[in-house]
Image (cartoon, rainbow over all chains, first blue to last red; front, side, top):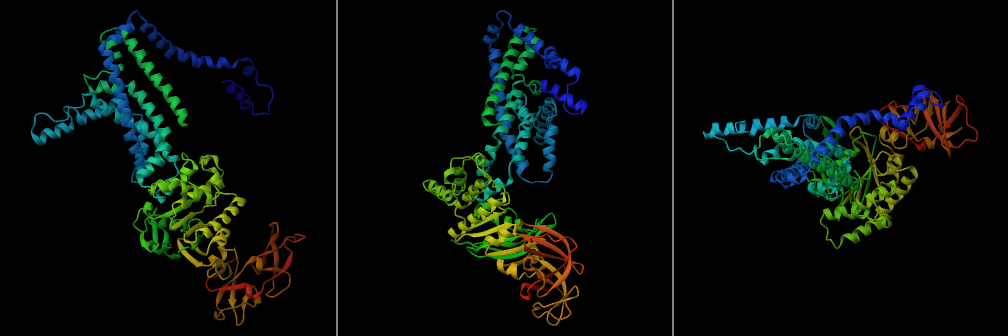
Amino acid sequence: MASAVRLAAPAATDQEPGPSPRTSRSIPAWVWALPPVAVLALVFLYPLALVVQESLAPGAYADVFASASFRDALVTTVWLAVASTAGCLVLGFALALVIAFVPFPGGKAVAKFIDVFLSFPSFLITLALLFLYGTVGMANGVWTDVTGDATGPFQFLTTPWGVLLAEITYFTPFVMRPLLAAFSQLETAQLEVASSLGARPLRIIRQVILPEALPALAAGGSLVLVMCLNEFGIVLFTGAKGVTTLPMLVYSKAILESDYAAACVVAVVNVALSVGLYVLYRGVSRRAGA
Amino acid sequence: MNSGIRFDGVSVAYGGTTVLDGLDLTVEPGEVMALLGPSGSGKTTALRAVAGFVRPASGRVFIGGQDVTALPPYRRGIGMVVQQYALFPHLRVDANVAFGLKARKAPKAEIPARVAEALEMTGMAAYARRYPRELSGGQQQRVAIARALAIRPRVLLLDEPLSALDAQLRSGMLAELARLHRELPDVSILYVTHDQVEALTLADRIAVMDKARLQDCGTPQDLYRRPRTEFTASFVGNANLLPVTVGADGVAFAGAELKVPTDGVAAGASATLCVRPHLVGLGEGPNALRGRITEVQWRGSTHRLYVEVGGHRVKADVRELRETPALGTEVTLHFAPEDAVLLGAGVADG
C-alpha cells in the first residue's frame, strides 16, 4: 500500500521527481488499508467470530464430538472429498492430456468450454445427472421402455456413489484448467526427443509430462479437496438421504433442529479442516516449486 | 552398424499445402549431409519425416535399408538434437543421458558406463549431477548431444543445433561436432541448418532446399565453386548473378565483353554469370567492369563495395581499404575468367 502511495505521485504529475503532492505526504500509508480491512471485518471476520463465540457454549464441543452423527458426517465428508479429488485428478489428467496433446477437430473449442464450465453452479450438474440417472431419468426410462420392467437399474444417484459421481463431474475442470496451462508451457520438443530416444507414450507421460505437471496437479487437487469438503449444493440436490456431510450437518442442526451451538461447532470444525488443508497445500506447493 | 538414410519421393502436406515435394536423397552410411535452406524450405520437415514426427503423404523413408515410413519414432533407432536442447528439466544431467538407455531397456549394469562414456565424449563428465538449469546454453547442448549419442544411434538428426548459441560458442561446438563425427565414423548425420558456414564446415555433402524442393546437392566445394542453380549460387556464398548474353568466346554484360568459359552454351542465348564477391578485385585487370560505388560496408578485415554497373549491382569484397571511397566514386572492378561460372537458366540481378 505504501508503494502505491509513492507510485501515485509521478503518475499524477508526469513530471521529474520532486516533492510529493500534499495529500500523499500527509496521509499515512496504513490509512489506505483501513477501508478494505473494515469491509472484510464487517462481512467476514465478525460473522466468523460470532460463529466461534457461539460454538464456545458450555459443553457444545463435547456433545457434538460425542455424537455418532457428527463422527459419521466427518468420515463421510473426508472420504467423499478425498475420493472425489482422486477421481478428479485421474480423470482431469487424462482429459487434459487428450486435449493438449492429441489433435482432434474442435479441441480448442473444448479447451475453451472448460473455462465456461467453471462458471456453472454445482446444482446444474447434479440436475443434469438427475435427468440422466435419476429414478425417473432417461437411462431408467429407456431401460423400462425396452425391457418392460417397472423400474430401471440406475438407482445409485441417491447413494454416496451418486454424490461422488456428481462431485467428480463438477470439479474435474478445476483440475484441468491449471493442467492445461502447465501443458501449454511444456516444450513439444521434449516429447519428440523422448520418443526418438525410444520412449513409448506411457513412459513419456510418466517420466516427462507427469513430473512437469505435478505443481499444477497439486494446485488443482488442493482446490478441489477444499471445495469438496465444503460442498453443500450437490449433496442437497442429489437427495441422498443417507449421505450427511459436515455442511449438511450444519444445515440440519441450524435450520431443522435450531441447535445453533452444535451447528457452530460443526462449522468451526469444517473451517479448521479447510484451513488446515490449505496450509498443508501451501507447504507442499512451496516444496514442489509451484 | 547398418546406417544411412534414403528419401524415396517423399512428399509432406499440411492441410493442402505441400511443405516437402518429392524429395529424393540418399545419405550414405557414415556421411554428414547438411540440409541447407531458408525458413520454410522444407528442410526441417524432411528431418521430421526421418524421425517419424510427420507422416509422408507419399514416398518412403529408409534407415539402414529398412523401410521405416510406418514405424513410430521410438522404433527407428535415431538420436536427435534440437535447437532448444529439450533437456528434461526435472532430471539431472546423468539421468537425462540415461533416459534413452532406460527407455530401450539397456541392461542396468551397462547404463552407468555408457552414460559416463557419452558425457566423457562431450566433455560434460564433471557436470553429471547438475540440473539443466544450472548449465549454460553450450553445456546444455553438449548434454543433449551426449543423450542422443548414449543410445548409439544408427543415424543422428541435428535440427539447427547451434542456432541458440552465440557466435563464439557456435564456432567451438562446430569443431566439437566435427571431432565427434571422426570418433563415430559409422553414424550417418542429417544436419539441418540455414547457416551456410555450418554446412560448409561440417558436411560431406550439402543438399540445398528451397520452396519445399531439393534444389541442388553436392560436396561443399562443388556447390561453392560450381553451383548449378541461381538459388544455390545466391544462398551459398551470396554470389553476384549477372544477366549476360552468350557470345562466340565469352559473354556480353552491360556493354562490356567478358572472357569466361561458356561450356558449350549456344551463342546468343541469355544466361546468368555467377562471380563470388571475394573473387572480384578493385582496379584494372581482366574482365574489367566500370561503375559507381553506391554503398560501402566495412567488415573488419574487408570492405564490401556495392558498385552499379550498367544498371546492375555488383558486389566486391576487397581487403580493408586504407581510405574508404566516397559514394558515387567511379571505380573499375575485374575478375579472372576461371573465377566465373555460367549458369544456363534465368536472369537475376545480384
